[in-house]
Length: 211
Ligand code: SIN
Ligand code: FE2
Image (tube, protein in one colour):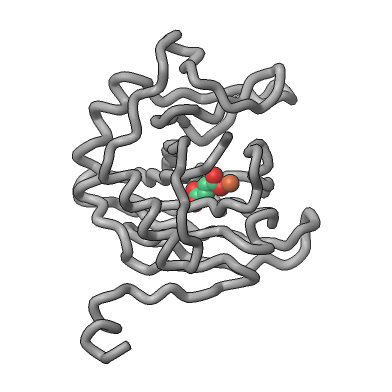
């Protein structure tokens, strides 16, 4: 690849075992234009875990299916249980972003049917977990950061241990594929900061192939 092309294409940096960071890959202004419409159709909500706790991260979905946590367990559902309607369609620019990011990390042919939308306020954390409710685990997970920064923690295939700490800024995209696809990961409590467009908030979109 010549130098000019190398400069135009954001580099994918492998952080660990098939987990790639694509720094400043996403045009988040474009994403934020789509968001109000999606959140109006399927509002953000604090889901309940199977253990009966309320999640601190506010969540909703767009796409063919949505990830749902409930006292009965985790599932992918084509209906939003809050509205009783199908989730709003995944906007075309979301789909294109997810496909391009996966391909830039070396995972071709990714066609997500879920976009989980997470909203973090200051102090909100996401405890370490593995994304394992998808039928086919060989597809990567593509995760897009919007708004104020956070520290993403990538562990290994066992709970605990030392984390690789990856600061994620607006526009950064993480792609979890290969062995890291089944690694524990989470987000440290978000520290106070302000984004000129959305204030003291961080959104994260995770694109998955559920079925
Ligand atoms: C997730 O693991 O589902 C979200 C990760 C993030 O917010 O960066
Ligand atoms: Fe996750």
